[in-house]
Length: 262
Image (tube, rainbow, N blue to C red; front, side, top):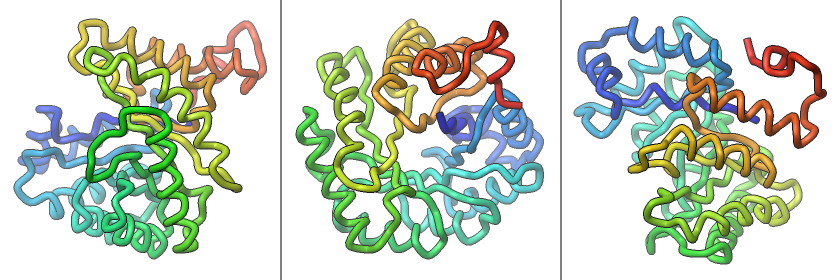
């Protein structure tokens, strides 16, 4: 599983304050903590309160690159903020994210090609979040078609089925699991799949339990990547065990220690 650490996000008060005060130590400590817990990539989001998101994105990326060469996921709904991040990124990058809207695809696919970035695409349209598996598959096919026409490598495309909170959309979650599996047969090569895991537990009292239970299930449906909190030890242990059960790792008595990423 490709693990993207979610904690460098201005919606968290400590990160938002660090961005405002340009406090590098807070950001760099969070980077190191997530990497030590197993993050393969770091999501970077200025948060909704940023008054100068393009400038803040560049500061965040420069600050992170002082201490690590880990891949970065440039997370913004604004193409100009994504572009600002791409312009200063020295390491490999992902764009998080586009939707299935043709206008947005027409902007972000060329950007991803120009900067050799991977692309996360949400199965989301101007009509909102799809309400069933078939609509998610239809939007995924539109995204794949647009990438193919633009000659963007499909192996660098990550499709997100858009997780919704279990307390408001419980009936959709089985469809989402099945959609993740069926995204793999849309094309050859197949796009990869990804979820923003914490969305499923928003508003619940047992967030860690809900997150880790769903993560273990979705591993069985072939998920390739997840944006998660790698510092949740029980979550990471559950991921390791799930991959072991799916025969993605070789069993040994000390499998947790053996497969923790250092």
